[in-house]
Image 1 (cartoon, helix red, strand yellow):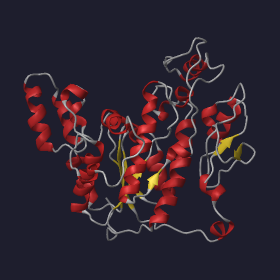
Image 2: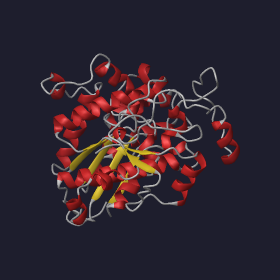
Image 3: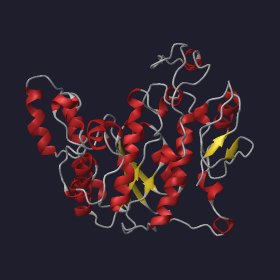
Amino acid sequence: MGRILYSDTPLDELRRSCNDNPVSGSMLQTNVLRRTKGGMINCGDYSIALLAFVVLLLLCSCSKSEQDEPLALSSDLNVLWIGTSIPEGCSYPDYSCRSIGANCINKSIGASFLCVYDIGEKGIEYAGLSLTETIREKEKKYGKFVKENLLSTGRMKRFIDSSYETAVLPYAQWADVIVIDHGYNDDISLYKLYGAKNSIDDTDEQWQSMDRSNYIGAFNYLVAEIRKVNPEVQIVVGGYFQNTCTLGHAVRGKYVQHVTEDLCRHYKLPILDVWNYVDIPDGYKPHSENYLDSINGIYKTDYTKWLPNERGEIPYFQIFCPDKVHPFSDPTGTSDKILNAVVSELFKKRLLEAGVKPSHNGEDF
């Protein structure tokens, strides 16, 4: 599949097109989109490069015979989606499931991560948000801080709720599909794994490890725990939405890409390679020095510039994520709708390729 890019179109027209037309399987605006084999987004002075992304990948890449005789997924699938604040706040998990008639339960938790980290690495307020830490481990590790009034009981409950024993296993037995949409908040581990390489070979001993301080070991552990409960469940690995940005923390994207590709290759799992279809250029959007003031005035938001250049222009990344992290922070809703279109089409395609069928005997979550 090639990337689908928006043509040069004024900002207000792109926004209006996205907001006036619900993103669905029938939304292919051929007058706005053009397909290329690759390359960066071509933007005019008054367009948003970040909107130059896909809207319907598969419709443009299918052969005629595939379109004439479409494959169908069962509408009786149960999908459990787990991840960070990005899938927690974005609508693409629910949208992707509804687009195929599946039942969705989204147990993504903001600021959570896959690995187990030391308090010195994440701090008292966040270290307990590990998905692979057990309830007993959390109680032993953080209970003393509650007694010392260094951690609230509410925060401790959130730690407990973020354990796989709470957020995953109770639902795993009924799930046909579990999407693991993590990586962004595991930058500490990913920098260590991929700081000097782009891939980890299948013969590496890390694939046999259950060391949860290591992202691959934590993933191995989580998959093993899930399969104890439901050996037939189809695991899908969610992917981050960009891999090109080099400014600030946006550089995490390429590390999430590396580990997602390695996990899916090693385990032969379906991959939601979203970064291949949401092409956010690196660097700064020309003439964007007043963009945040504009949306703040219209939508009553209070976003501030992140790493502006000497001309006051902001990175392309911040146009897609005004709060510097979350696509759903775009008050126009356009970034969220772009991800809905991309992820839903990839999700359907990958499940079809995997031949997923219901295995829960007709019982919903």
